Image (cartoon, rainbow, N blue to C red):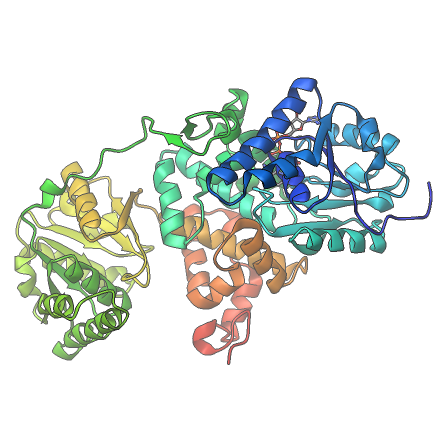
Length: 594
Ligand code: NAD
């Protein structure tokens, strides 16, 4: 072996041309470099080429690429079954399945044929790079080069340096990553690196919700898209990643952390066993119209649309509370054409909600989204009241007072005496048991949760939470109501955190634990999640907005409900809250603000 290490990457080799290999070949060739890939069989070579062509054709159809550009990109890519063809490559990226043995075997073969000064990289998501590197005669020239799916689109590359990787190798790899338009983040050799260690436990937990029948896959996906602003729901993402690949990644993370939360859910093994590996096989959790397609075919989970006739006679909504949440709900209901009775403890407070709505609507008028006339009509529908008895006219009541079970009990008990027999009674609680509010009334069958997200006038999601006592008709009425106020409704059971908070907050807490372990900085973690997973905000930016105190309170509630050790709040989170670093609202959280 020579001491020389290649400084410039002119030719790239790819080993394995599946989901990731094909994407890597595409992005490298798009940047003008020739690519040689190696597959197992002639058939797999053909499949690999077809996969690349398919992706490029879709882009031509969407007019993101001309057919000349497509032809040029294809002309730079060649595939074969011969590892010997890799002898001209400066960098070889291995992207065979996430199975240690397979990767070690592939590395032994690559090492035999690669030039002595060439760099060999693995695209592993979760296996120790060092365990792969030692199967070559040049472990100092091996590193992790972890692309994200889809590789041509996602900006992040985690460059994984082992304890023996030469600095010059990291430098060359970093420059190469930048030259193909990516943002490299250099990390140490720990299973899952930054993004997957935070992403996969969250995905696995989403799978657990679907597996256990807590919510449908469609609802879990819609909840995370509309409630947390994620670009894709976790179940759709699992299908995109590939169910078999997912199992490999979870196995690897589990073997490091030994927590049941990281154990791949049994349904994943069953799907993989049936070769229902997600989009690439045309069926995973969802069914697709053909292998590789993103078009979903309806299945037995597809719910009938909500029936608007069930609430035809509804004219009036009562909202109890005058805080931020109540105010947003008042606006949404009034804009949907309902008369809204806003009940405050004092007239001033109730009137302040109407005044706040007026300001908010005026902003919409200024932006041209609403006419003056529509604003006036909407405001005329809002009626501040202080006497609970005034809610007797309501068809639906939404309680949005403080998150205190005793206060809610008192209200529900009183409301049950006042409301029309058919009126539906709902709570916006985000963490308390809905059944407990329902049982404070004499009509638990008419009670359910309607969990809105802040700011309610903007956020589209409403979690509809029936209890074990709620009538099906009431659930269907709630679905129709949510649709009428132009929100996206998802159904889930009566458990702390419902869908969104149960999936979102443990992930935030895990990010704090990662920071605390000094594996990466808050900026690096935020960058990884934004550029690797397309999240609108990194976990630390998000916690600063939500409030560290709120994050801590939700984790405590989830721990109480699920009694799972991994929900134990990160000690650093607790210390930050104790120090008064609560986030943007006080000018300091994980970041410092003006
Ligand atoms: P895949 O199953 O889609 O593709 C693997 C390909 O490797 C197949 O085409 C297979 O024929 C080929 N192959 C198997 N053994 C080979 C060998 N010895 N030599 C040459 N080719 C061989 O898998 P994938 O999803 O592309 O995953 C590949 C790697 O990328 C894994 O390490 C995975 O963890 C990682 N990764 C996956 C994703 C994702 O979202 N799928 C994201 C980032 C990283």
